[in-house]
Length: 483
View 1 (tube, rainbow, N blue to C red):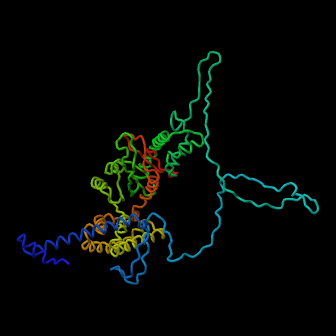
View 2: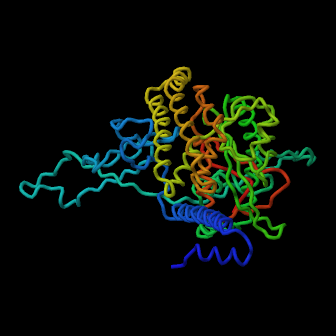
View 3: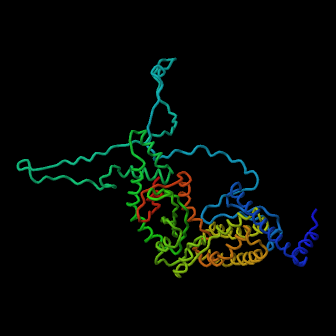
């Protein structure tokens, strides 16, 4: 074992410095290295958790009773936290009771039915005892669900020409009916099928090209991509109307974005990263927008002249929006704050569990309000009387933990996010119409994320105008992108 004091004395003798000064310098360096080592270990644990750990955000880690500084030991188990937008799934500790199988679900009555009677052979319709012809006394019906493959049909528009038989003048001919793509071959049903298969059923265009080829119809992927762009152009007025008449008049809007890899043949490299934004209104209306950069240009354009609450995840892209538009009031997202503590759980179990338990109680109040079907004023009163004290306790605990946490640890990042955005996070208690989190916008982006996981890139002939995506009655996301 190395004698540290002897080493310090030799170093001090060689440099002319005092031994105590050298010892203090080495101690300071050792403390710095230990702190850096601890931060790196926490980062490795966080990455390991993200790769191999449980990703569900439901529930709170089990902690011992009495671990919360503001809860008595007999408080009982903490109720799992749920999102404000999704229905609560009932969970029971232990093995659930065995339930009787409800049986087969009845087939839809509105489906067309084909009746097939299977009768015995003629020789079996005579009684073997007295040779009398047997009569029908009943029947058993067995239902079978079958599938008739989709088929193409060619619709011919024949427009006869008429002219005067005597002078051959005044030729008349009926005009063609309105068509989705002028001088194009696809009908409205085929276009609806292509975009629905791609954006609702996540069927890439190259697979649709192969399916069409099995039917004997040769349509290239490039043509299918152009059809998608044409449909987006047709739907753009609807998107603008939805944004103007449904989303913007909402007292609050939820906003979120996700990255999108886009194949642009006009650039090198061809793959560019864009951003898809979602704007969700009070009644669930959803409008999508696309921008190349994650800055205020897109949100500033979509939220021009808007007055009300905007619920976001505190990304820097929204800072200029709130700074330049005082009429837009920021509302935070507790799901994002909770996610930070979930990720820091492997590195700081006890403080994270304490914070998550209290956040779970906030979500429990929202669940109780939803189960009781409280209106906005009653929900606001519930939040003011019960959620406000919980938030005050949580704020005090977060400040105490921040003073004793390593600055570069995952827990420090979680504490910093919550405390920096505390005003926005607590704003939901001011108005009963507001949501506790931004999960509604995240869920509206989930179909796009699922589509990206199946189609690594979007390819398109991009124009200078922003591609617009909307969800209409079929809930089909349509974009000026195709792959």
